[in-house]
Image (cartoon, rainbow, N blue to C red; front, side):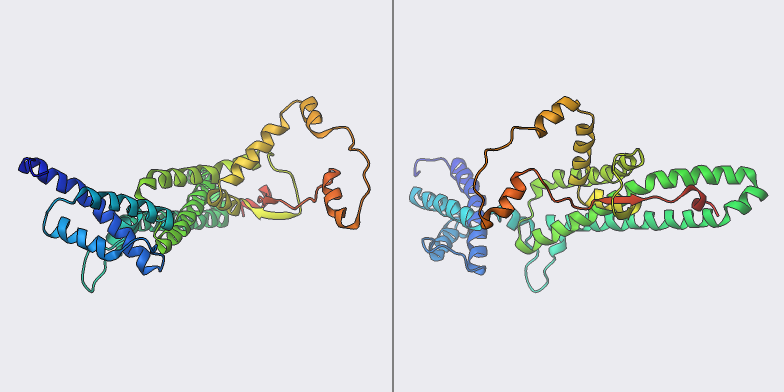
Length: 306
């Protein structure tokens, strides 16, 4: 490299700076958590740091190869924590004051706070309006028919949008819970921010759609009752509930012959049973334990208007 031009020399130094910093981030975190592999020598890494970052000199080929080995070893040892997640959860300031909320992870947490409290405030306001309407509906209908008609439309819109708001609230609470785990384990990856935003949108839609499916008769009556608001929150918190329900509805429309083909089969050959196989034989015979399902409880029409 002695024959390189000054510009190419500087570019080579700059291109390796980020890589060396990533290795140092991983090595320091591994040391702090007591998981530093024995084949990685911190003094070697600090020597390279002094050469590369402090003195702005070029690292040798052997040093670069050693850095690559260190990166691979640390990545396997610390997974799912990565250099990117460490940078995203590291304070930008030095000294006694640490501003962790000014990181990528901190900004994500603040956004989830805002989404949660906004959805909660909207839910509270809509519930207050529903209570006010139901309490004063009879009086408004007598005193001001025009106002009563407008209030009825608003009440209907309020009732329709409420499950979606509960879905948004459930999704934001889920995202906050996930963020708490990612902050504690330092696994927050800013590259997944579009995925997190999409999860919030899916939760909002799921909370409303699952209630609409219930209203159309998509869920059978069982022993456990649950309100539509709680169902919307659960739908937003766990979108798998919606997709499970959709699968059940699609299966109900499948041809009867296809379902019978999947459920009927020739009896298995008789085998000698032992006491230890009682549970296995019970499951293999096609008998399944039924578990109660969550089913919303809606207000009766006579109870909605005072």
